[in-house]
Image 1 (cartoon, rainbow, N blue to C red):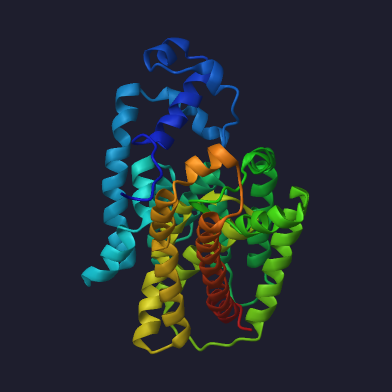
Image 2: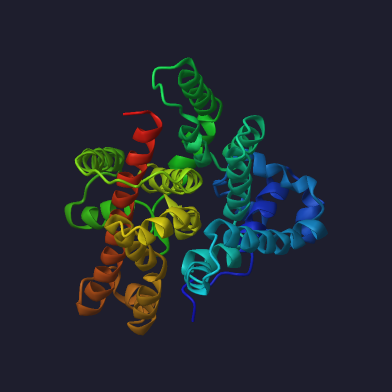
Length: 364
């Protein structure tokens, strides 16, 4: 009854050890785990290659790691949300992205935990430990490196800020092959996808555009929304700790949406938005009320799509007639379009707030 569309328990976690064992030719271990290495090696590995070292961990221990990760993930989620109110914890932790990431045993939980420790030490005005946690998470999943902007200081043209840019460029150069390999494989689907590419695919269905245009579409859309956000000013006050948490969550989500393709469980990082949103709502800032409403729809709307998907028996329609347009598929498509509209609105609202925080940091 939950919109996770099947899949074995911890399938993403097992995917890592399966690829790791097969690619490192640990054939005895692969046979013991009943892996079909011939079929596995035909597929591109979609994570940075450091995960292929997972075969060094014993099979017995590797299988139980997700349980410990989930427990720590839930504890940290509640710390990040930082409220004693039952409703926000329930509405966030039982939404599709959070349940999905735990059911799949996805390594996004590890990145979430590392980012939390990054924030924890950053709030204590440390430098070395946050940097260590940031680059570890960056090597494990690449996208966390975007939150380097949280280190920016008020003088924009300072040696410190240029040093941060140098670190970012150096990291991208080191990870260039990984980024190209992963980006060339990742293709957006329709359900359980968090990406601007979904809207592009819907447009492409009618106009038959080349996929090569997606990057131009995405960057163009980002620039248009950013330019519009510059015309909207919001006084968010001075909430140092909550602002840092918001920078982390919004930067990861915006980067993931416009420049990559990810499953919906990337939205677990929306938990980092909640502290500032809650403060903003208490201050009666309308933008934060809108952001909260749109976020809730983004987290829960997949339920409506899932039940519609099953009610119209979409798999039967697709297998018998292909991707046809009729009343049933139009309704399903409209719901998918509406969910993605919430994603676009969420990113636009995050841009407005993130812009205000960054401009304040740089003393604009």
